[in-house]
Length: 477
Image 1 (tube, rainbow, N blue to C red):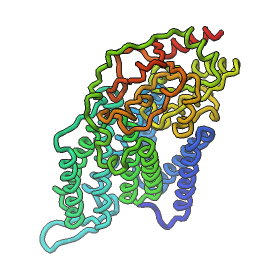
Image 2 (spheres, one colour):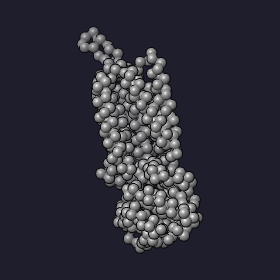
Image 3 (cartoon, rainbow, N blue to C red):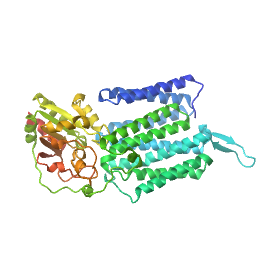
Image 4 (spheres, one colour):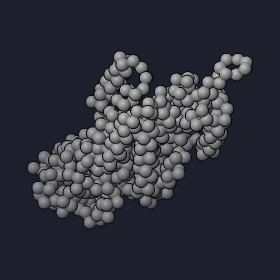
């Protein structure tokens, strides 16, 4: 299974693929260069796959082509049919497959180490020959299986939460931190034991406990923190792939896995800072999972003000500046195109229009940025939280379309709230807040009612986001 090391063209091909991956990450850091970055990533992966198939005796060509056709066909169909609203759970599902693949490769290598070239055949004086796995390979195997199993089970729970199959509220198990600590320590001790003696029961115990702790780490995490979870699981999947790259002796897997693992960890760290969360607590699981009276999902019975599309059109047309705050509700309604049309009409009337993006709006990092780019919203009109929060106090109208938790002032004032401590957009400081929401009965993904709805300067626009914006566009003329 290992590369043909004597062929310098193999190393050169993998080097070129690695450079493409690095340039792809650089391109994906900006919406303006994201398409080019995506193409470079595809080229790099194509080079790596072709090189691996040419230089390894994996299977016959017909078998390889059939496998590519099946996997590629499934991926093509899913990519064509999946809605942008389902992209977060799709990413979580893909992470689970990467983790499962790492586990299966590790199991295959453990059961048949000779085929992977990671063992030495020992012939005892009495008994059958025994394949002794190299010590370094035992370390790689155990770590790869452990990380892959955690990634798989954790990603499955993340998928269920994002898909709505499992509730977004934290599920707080008794003594969960102590339980996680005990299981984590047991996994580390078993890895050490396995590397010393190649014990079969230790190998399987590592896999089982890793599957279990992946479940336990993600279950206590609430909906508001799921974007960070997706980012962290992305990092885990990268490290699992890198570990299996060592087992397979494949440089491309090592490079790719290390890039995904490190970039995912860096992104998670940046997001943790943006959400005022501890990076260590992300790794440990259960961060942001604070139970309190505000997290029971009940709506507050207080008076609120209802407005119409005509009211919204008049207020925005008379404003000097309007800041649009998109959220998951915009994605569900697929309202980004009509939203851009509304912004264009306002700009024609001399109104300054800006877009405010929260780091975790849309349940996945960059979700809102992708939707706005899809609608050809100019990049120079889109601002991150730290760049625009100070402008709300000088803004006439804040137009919130489907963003709930990321605009909730309770994150700054209510210590019992599950989202307390998470930086939010200061939309309540605007002269008028126009808030599009389907009804007053629902709450945000974190299960918290938004006290912004009941502020004196807030006008609720209750309707489907796309239909409401269409009506506002008509009212603007």
